[in-house]
Image (cartoon, rainbow, N blue to C red):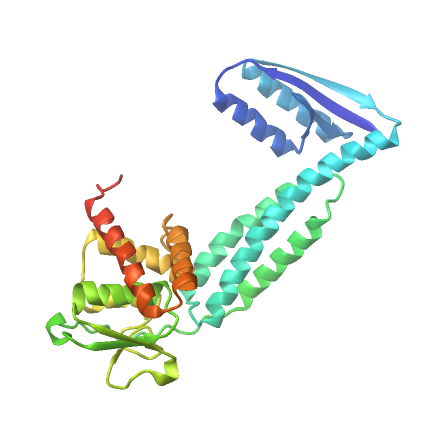
Length: 324
């Protein structure tokens, strides 16, 4: 079997040029054989790819030469093929993981009846690059890596699910505005086993709406009738359209400010799982809240500990300079 080898040396100290060459080797599907030596299997197009890559290296103040070698050693041929299979397998597995994560988010949003047309359009947009990426890997998958068919099938399933789903018409009643003076010293209730939206909403209520608020956390069928429900299906203060309960409370009581807006975006991304705001803090806060729930196992203790974290975030975002 014939193989092409590209021996090169990049003399420029600039990392930018080195990264550029590395990306170009990936683009043509070459794999590293030994230090500074890349390899491609026999083929007219692959020879042209290496010749083109050689020109790019020389243009970056480097040296490059292309050699052809014919090997009759089946063991060596198999070792070289395995290099390509492993490289493509890693790329397929990474793509497959991204497809499956988007699929899980889609199924979760469907199960929770939170998949609006706007969110569906956003998921379709996120899925769009997967097809191009799959085609790029397939183009340089010279020896048929095993996970190629899995990635292709997973992408077909995802596309079918996205195409088949018809989101229900969004009928959201006009939002009412409330005066905080009428909500003092009240009992508020929500479902037990609180996570981010119920935790943050309870913090918001006690910190900015009703400082003397008392909370009852119970199964949804056992919530007290004389208490004000929040984050409960059908309640005034709950999910509305694409907004989580925390956002509904902000709007209902006309609470504004950069710090609250920042916290709202983080809570939304964690609770709605739609990556609407792409807040980098979301994953960390999600982990912290889950850790508190696992360690404390009591909603009142979780609220107390979580409130300290939210207080700190509020101070941080209040003092943070815009754009920093």
